[in-house]
Length: 148
Image (cartoon, rainbow, N blue to C red; front, side):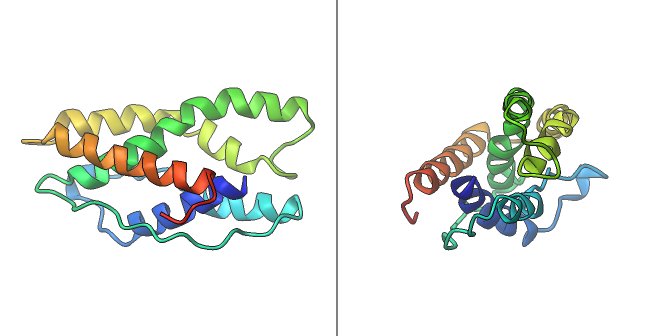
């Protein structure tokens, strides 16, 4: 969980520093940093040192942001399974698994994310893919305890 926080906190901060494109209307990315902070506290775990995340260029149609979001929003799919397993271990919203519930209940956001991709004009999918790879590399560094 500390590694997940080490990944999500700086990436979510990076996203928060960028304005949401007007084409998003009411859609917003799923943020769980605050839930991870609560879970770490509930389990008596310290927050890891902050990693520096240098996100990609935005791109003309927001490709950089969309690529990063691919990584974060896709996590909601796995959270459903992991959340059930955590519940089997006695972990729930009040004692260490709130972040799993927060992403598992946002699975509809995944569909909304793909609607954004479908509706984006002149989207350079290679830039989106490059940005997603940037996020995956950063996640790997966080889970390996390396500063990216």
